[in-house]
Image (cartoon, rainbow, N blue to C red):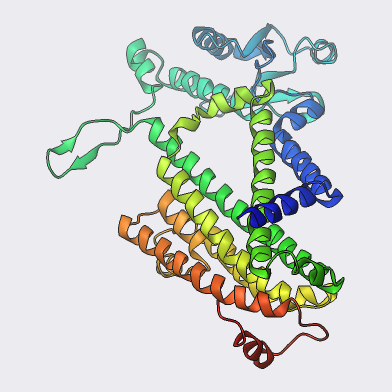
Length: 436
């Protein structure tokens, strides 16, 4: 036990201190930070807020009265009644282009609205003019469109409807969702936004877990195989096995690399949380009304279980393959079958995330090489019975034990086989000499 602890500690310290690990982690952390703050960077360089008024200043838009003074007055009155502080309408009696351009250049207004003077239509079109044809942001445009729709209704019906009836025309229709219970009939409990937020969070967690599994499998698995091959090609392995048994080396390296992967993931999580807590991102999260406490606990627990089991299944295979390769140049070709398996697991999980209950997902969730990604998709987004989850876990454990035993025999014989890559016949013959 002390020896395997020594191997684990040595492997962990040796890897986290390498330039490759530090640079890779740093570069990925920077990429994550940039990706999270892309909306803020767009806002910063374009000089616009994602939502006008987020900086505390109201956006001012000119409203030309002109010959359509009645419509402009109705729009202005309606807008003031909404108490919308994000956008203010500034009155202009006439469409004096020179005055309007000067005000835009001086920043008094960002643009101006003007009703066309076409008398052949029931309701005139509205033109928004701004410097270099810049458009209103989508939120302000949607709010103004709603206001104009109300003004249009008022203009068309005029005195044929009461003010209350006109106001009712502009009120959106309520659309509620009810759930049916077999025990008590129709449940009149309206669906809340919390359920939608939970689904969004579960979708995000599932997607992140799939990416983490693939990333960890590829990086740490290749590191395990590469380190074993390097030690073998440099003949250091001959010295190591005199003090530590090959099996202790193999499992020590696997656990040590697993801790390296967890360290990297923990770093990325800290970077993610730090960026999300920055002032410019807090408002965006508040707009989505997301709460991390809404994440399903089952998704996190089972996600971690499948992540760990899936890692060890692939790790023992990478270690076995690395032990039979004598030159690092041949390692890429040797690990190709394992790489293809992990790619298949990744693609099945991601491409079927919109159809978690498909036949492909159900079958793949019981194949240990694919279940770490497909089963977590079914747990987080689809429908799955508890017995299916534990049957998948049991299949994973059985495969880990079998391939761990097989990889241990291959590793024990392969680390001292030099020259060209041994054939399967030679490996089987050498394995018969050892009982594990």
